[in-house]
Image 1: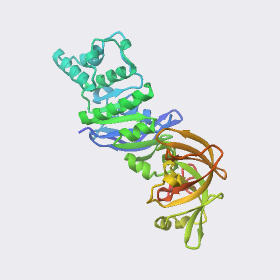
Image 2: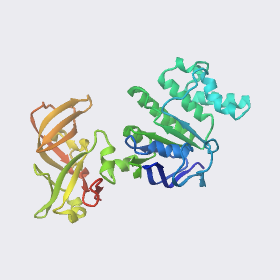
Image 3: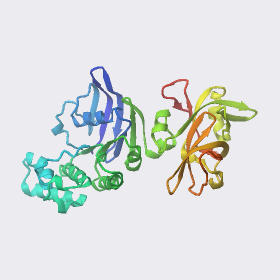
Image 4: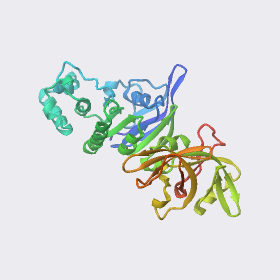
Length: 370
């Protein structure tokens, strides 16, 4: 078993609160990603688990044992940092073996573990090289290998791909995912990149200002965000938000955006009825705004007249930056779309995937209405 639990964890640096009553249960063999903007507390949460920071209040448990007062070396975890932290004067082999030598492990066992880890990571031919002779991706593999040889209960990754170029990041995150499947060990991974989180995680913990916003699977976070922050953070490009008002016209419920009115699907109306005549925030993702000529046939779509502000051709898709009234928003449309800047264009909102957020109870971070 290699479970990890944060139980009512607080961390303060003087008057600054980095973690606020965080509760997270990480299952054995799970790949949990902590994600959020810079300064949200994700690295602090990782460092508290590693024993590099002391918790101010609450408990951290590994395999149901409280480890608050356990020294970092005795927690049976291994950490991979953003900076590779390799010894420049040592070979790859010696860098990977260094921690085992400090534990006075037999040479044969050290050799076996290093060679096995090198084979897993595809760096068998690099063992005699020095770090300066390696590329960024190779150095990162060595840093991961140094963690693997320890055979810990839990692997901790602190933004390990931040120093890599875009193409190598995509390649390396796939390798980390395969590594998790191969080792069948608990991984806890910190990143500010929501694409990394979505593609790698079993579950994602979204943090902001030291507060856990939502903990769920990637698809659930995308489809059913709990609040405005999660909705805007998960997804690229980000969800579009419009200030509006829910109104009733006859038997129809509509979102009034001043410049246009959007008909709410009949199967959604009952849960939004209590908000009639109230200000709300309407949310819709760019991929749910279509060119009507290429819209999926089964959606409940509402036409909206817009003006094209900017176009970005991506090859397999086009990003349109559109204007309706005083609202600016982004649509992700079919690449066959032919439209120029300044032209008028009708788009179709897929109201099946609309979101409504209630700003009354919590104006700073409106909650989703479910």
